[in-house]
Length: 140
Image 1 (spheres, rainbow, N blue to C red):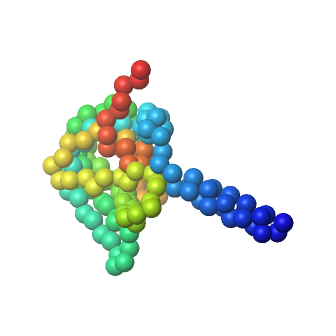
Image 2: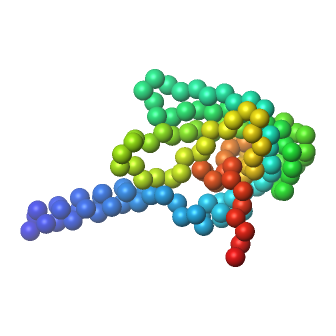
């Protein structure tokens, strides 16, 4: 009886852990984008990446110019320069299921952006994880 109980506990722990890292449904990314306080188009002016030895995380700091504003709680306007910061986690090659990683921005790229302003770092951060730099999908 004790081994069955232990097996059930182990199974529940494994299932709940897997759900923590499960991919997010596309509709949820769209909800996150629509709920972003900063919705705009950007031209990326510079990108700096740093990472640690034996680390799966890349730290990104990008400078960008606002080219179009759809919504801005911080009152951004066309021509403003902003700084974005975020992390890219590179998952293990096999067996990984998790949220879509945020893409690495490239200098000269023009992209939609769904962001939040981070008071602590005084920079803008992605608000929709890996979909933060993808256009909104139309509502059907």
